[in-house]
Amino acid sequence: MTTIQIELPDATAQAARAAGLLTPQALERLLIEAIRRQQAADALLSIADRVADAGVEPMSMDDLNAERKAARADRQQQRAGRH
Image (cartoon, rainbow, N blue to C red):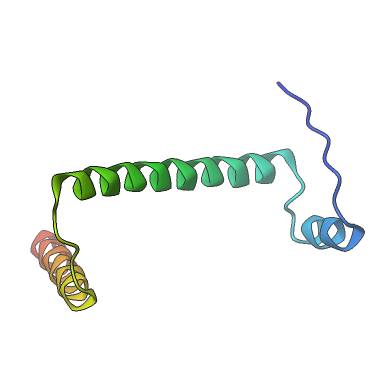
């Protein structure tokens, strides 16, 4: 186990304490989630670099929205088929 000491403005510390965020368990969850988001962002940026290097044209916002809607519709159909 590692012990970490941090300094926070009083108002931030009070609000965090009131919200139950200063417990070891809550801080661990917050840090794990932040690490996961950072890793996901790094992976996305890595993919973006490879796509750019491959000369793939960027998609328009309309195309992105259409792909997103199609993926959601597919997931809904798959869920409906399981019931």
